[in-house]
Length: 137
Image 1 (cartoon, rainbow, N blue to C red):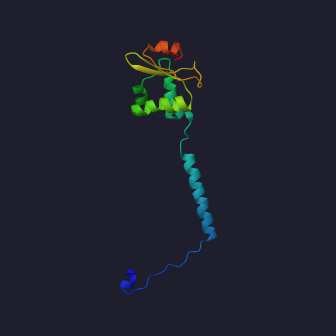
Image 2: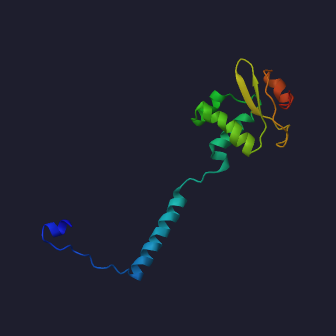
Image 3: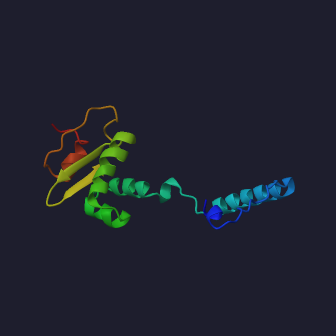
C-alpha cells in the first residue's frame, strides 16, 4: 500500500533455490560445532554437582547446618530446606534426621529404609537422634 501511495511497484525478490552442495556443507559444519561444544564443556558428574556436595555434608558424623549448606552451595535457606524435603527425602528416599541443640543440625541416617513412615522430629541431642536412627515419636 505504501508503494502504491508513492506510485512505485514493490520489488519481488527472486526465488531462492537451495544448492544441495551448500546445504550439505552447512549441515556438516553445524554438526561439528555441536560436537565441539560438547567436547569443550566440562562434564557434570555426580561428584561435582551441588546435590552431591550436600549429601556429602549430610553424611558427615556431625551432620551439617542449613547455614553451612547455604555457604557451600550459594543457595538461600528456603532452597536448602526444599532440597532436604523434596530431592533428598522424596525423590532419593534418603532418611534425613534433624536435631536441635543450640543450633539445628541435619544428617542422613542409614538406619531407616525409604518405605518407612515419616518420623517426627523432636528437640533431642543430635547424637541421640543419630543413635536412634531418627526413629522417635
